[in-house]
Amino acid sequence: MYDQVADADGLAGLDHPVLEAAKAMRTPGLTRVVQVYTTIGGPIGMPVLATVVLALLAWRWRAWDPVLLGLATGAGSLAMTVVGKVVVGRVRPPLADAVPPYEQSFSFPSGHSLNAMALAGITAYVVVRRLRTRRARVVTVVLAATFGVTMGLTRVYLGHHWLTDVVVAWALALGWLSVVITAHRLFLTTRRRLPDDRTQPARA
Image (cartoon, rainbow, N blue to C red; front, side, top):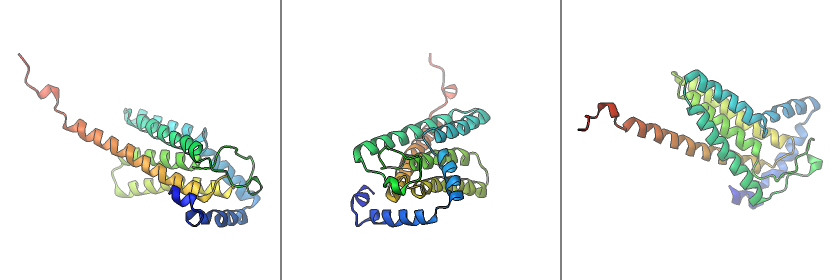
């Protein structure tokens, strides 16, 4: 994915055309709606939203798993965002093409997109584990994916990120989600296989 970003003949070749298309779509009303929506996925809004939802689920189910999974996912996504911006150092689209308020940090990857996809994904995973019907699970996953995708698209619409910043952020989020979820599944499997101390014969 990074090679595609660095190579102007690859995926990055879509950056400018997509930005121009986004600019053509802008209207005052739509821009106000997008600005409010994108705030939810910001460095304050998204962690607060995810923490509240996962804490409520943990309280409802009397389990710490939702909170711990949320913390692990959030910490990983934040670390990838910070490291990616410092290592790549990619410049954002020109301010003339962006909607204020402007952002001054580096562009790659999109933190809004990465964190939204990762935290929405882990929330969906936590919820899906408790759902009984296939339909409810599918709806939950679709809603989480839609949230992550639309959050990323708002960044392009506002001219705050290139398309490739967002696409790579989605890929990183899904990769990190797979790591966290796989680790959790292995933990649950290992815990089930451990012998119950109460069933072991007493030692002399």
